[in-house]
Length: 329
Image 1 (cartoon, rainbow, N blue to C red):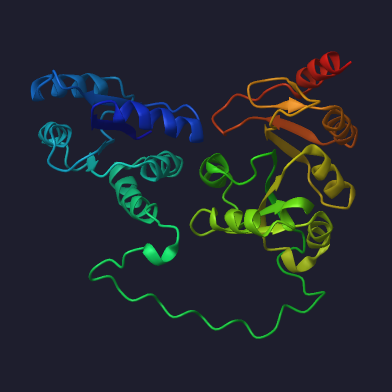
Image 2 (image 1 turned 180 degrees about the vertical axis):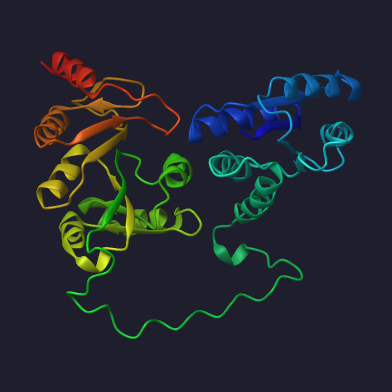
């Protein structure tokens, strides 16, 4: 696995490492190295050497620095001499860059390849709201003209692929599409499309718009009511589509599966605490309706994967149900 060093002035590297692991989960072979006001270049270099020595593969190393020309960059560059063929340094460290680096480590053990990917992601992560404030990069190529819309919809009854929609992941998460889903889970499951299934959100224009805008690059996000998702699940025109489904609660997942969606497993991510619910672990609070829906799903043969992020160990759904039922009496 490519080792990653986060190097910065002050506590920035420690802080961004903590933030990235909140989204992507704990990471092996990632070290933060910080330069403090009372330290000099030699002090930083020694800490950098010590951090690299902890990596399991010291031949494939990528160093992400906060600033070009600063001491963290200068000392990293000096230490890189003799390793130019396998090490890489990228400056302008930001959170999208780091998360992309974590994801790329699933598919390659080459630091140079990862460095190329993270530069593009770091640039794409700088956006403005409203979009009219987004500066046009000097010398940038003009935006490609939009492709003309396809003439007519795919006729009903058309069979694409094997005629059965593929479920990359079905997740219950009261936060719906957020950082952990848009980055960690989308990279781990590689869907073509993210679909939020919720009657309430489908009627809320603002929430719907925000969710569609939060989709990761290259993946389209949609918000549909439950009945529409049931129709999609039975439509052979979606046979070549691999989706990541998001539900706000177990009850919506139950209705969708009872309606005919062929979902075999549900990932329990997080359920926010509210009146009438009890906290059963550090991310999930269950109420009576949640417990009843989960037990019904289990009776239908649905399996549960209790994890916030892919790197977490799987939790025990039965233990969480037992705790909830004991406290809800």
